[in-house]
Image (cartoon, rainbow, N blue to C red; front, side, top):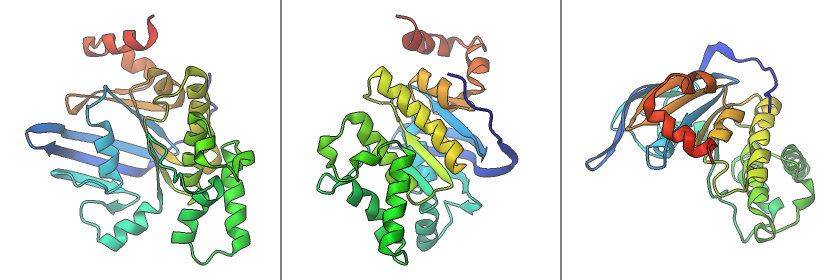
Length: 257
């Protein structure tokens, strides 16, 4: 599928990471990585399971502290920001969890209302309802508003999780394995949704995945993480035309049956 032409503002950095290190005991997960994300850009971080991809976005969101390095997000140094400053910054970062992270005891409406009622208490009931309806419309699931999460398919749960994130109108979206556990058709729909979200809300995104189809369809630029370091960066075509033998088996596994 051909992605729509869009404007990426390469004069405006929204995420800038320098010399980032993170270890867990003797396991050196991130070994001095650098990464920039520009306004309006979808950047895919590609790598095998266990290579530190999810650790990276948890550090960006301030959920984990790095051992060393600089992490600047929307002009804020995450490693030095106050707790209250971090709480405010997180309101501008949408985190789409692999599990969708919906509350099973709440309806779809209540799941989407929850972040608004917690963080935007000045809104009227009418404004909350309008925001919920707009977010559901954006992910194509307006009809599920009164359903329970248990009544939804895996793909629908993923979409509702994204809608709940969008309701806070984030500047940055962080997607953790968005197509994991989904069938090929549903995965394609999620890939389309990621691109639609970027177009509709002008977000900048990091998409963590080991799914090359997801990477190819959603990413404006790719960074391949192996052994704690980025070994290739560029467009999908450039990365896999590099001749790097470390990537060949990864490509073959995804695309050769």
